[in-house]
Image (cartoon, rainbow, N blue to C red; front, side, top):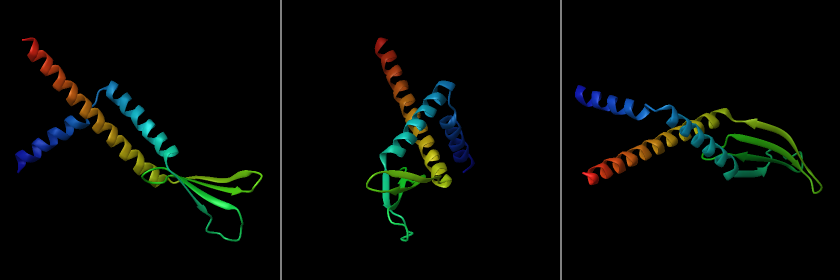
Length: 124
């Protein structure tokens, strides 16, 4: 049991150990995923307060919605009345995107190692 735990611990440390170059790639991927999440999913619905006609609420973000925008829509113009960041959804999405970026970087590193060992064996 202790040996299995030590093996798991070593693999987890190797997985989360990244170079500066990989860290920059992970930051870029996380930013890209966050931006695509923001523009990729928009849900708009009428406001729950029915006393104001033309008030709509839009939610942005995927898989969790993390931006809430209240706007007043008229046939001639639209005005933003309130913008909210839903911090719990944002934190969970960011955590998910960081882990996804880490897995992608780990996969790319494994593929590069496979390619380099295969090409070095074929030279011999």
